Amino acid sequence: MKYAILIVLIALLGYNSVYFEKLSDRNSKTSESFDFATYADSLYTQGLLKAETPIAIDQLLVEVKADQNRAFETYGNRLGIGNSAYFMVSVEGTVAEKTDGLLKVRDKSGTVWPVDTEFIFGNAIRDASRLVKLTDFKTNAEFNALSEALNSIIREEAIPEDLEELRQGDEVTVNGAIKLSKNEDLTIRVVPVQIDKP
Amino acid sequence: MNKELLKKSQSLLALFALCLVITLLSDKFMTTTNLWNVLRQISVNVCISVGMTLVVLMAGIDLSVGSVLAFSSAVCAGLLKSGLEFQSFDLFVGFTVLGGVLVALLVGLLMGLFNGFVITKFSIPPFVATLAMLTIARGATMLYTKGIPISNLGSSFEFIGSGWLLGIPLPVWISLIVVLVMVFVTKKTTFGRYIYAIGGNEKAAFLSGINVNRVKLWVYGLAGTMAAIGGVLVTSRLNSAQPNAGVSYELDSIAAVVIGGTSLSGGVGTVTGTVIGAAIIGVLNNGLVLLDVSPFWQQVVKGGVILLAVIIDRKSKGSK
Image (tube, rainbow over all chains, first blue to last red; front, side, top):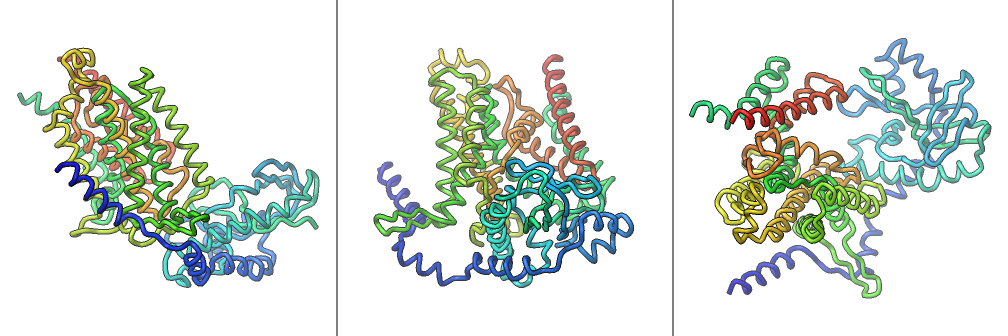
């Protein structure tokens, strides 16, 4: 009796835990739904790559020091009520070091800016771009899915291609996103959108 | 008698004192929104710490709970999001929320049982065996997720971590059920009494006929399952399984157990004490954030509180 009850319970849980579909039917259904990858791709090629050159990183920091609120308002994108915001910036200089996952760019003043070339995650690029708003999407999950798709294009296709030919000492221009906070000094790491060798 | 009562309720008094101090220093602490938020955050640690309590009661330790949490939640998220595809049979097996959660619990149970198996079969100290599992499970999580979060798991799953039931957040209900079940297990079942007996004197427990290895095996299994419940709560709250989820959660749970009065040498302690310990850690975390204390100082303060709890525990034992 005890085992019979156990078997019925397991069968009931199993029945309510999984469902079966034909893989081919499912794949055709999926292709009909909204395609974040295609949307992210057009956002990257038509939006980010064609956008005006963003403010130079050193110039931005000077402006933040002079009038923090104004600089955050003019160049940044702040989601919610937090003290931090994302900014699209450009870094011009020479390649000081190129290692796995990190590119160090030395600008004219000698400052070295770290650029993440492997760990491209989070919402920095989406939010710094100011091209999309949360209200354009039905749910937070969709808004985040776009970020994921955008990051994956940049991480897996664009940046590896840009990096291929790059050597130490090469001149380079990096456009990318950074995060700054109003009340603490965050370590600046550029999340790249594009790495150009002029 | 009064001294005994005072000793028993010292964690509770510490919690009240902490709440009072933070209320005086921050007007945001005693707001409904913040208190619900604190309870929601505590829920995860409560689930993990309750499992840890059973292990510590047996004079063991489980350092792998954070990684087990991460792996079980990653598997749950992966199955919910992508199911299983069998190309050669043209078959897709999808998982409902119930299915995903059950698999997560099963994964947690199996990993915990594996810990128990290694500890009992090969007589490896729990510290070493679970440390190895900590690394194995974290590596397995990274392999499974490829180091990338698994997101967008659906609103039904998100409801587990973010939903409300009868005006109370669902995670609070879940942790309450976990606590009630484990209070029952430790206080009213033979299995519970075996745990205390093994923690008090393992040799004596063995000589009196208790199957020590079997009890240990299931206690580690339960600790893994509790970690998996915590994993489901974290993942559903974020609607995303993070590969680095649960890092250092084992420390928070050990802290909750110790602060709650469970002796690291086993045999003494209660599940309710651990709940108070978890509440102290949660309130402390929340209070330090509200008071704008630097995260670095937060760690120092938390460490100090744990140290203080152990010193008080030792002193009270010494005075006996």
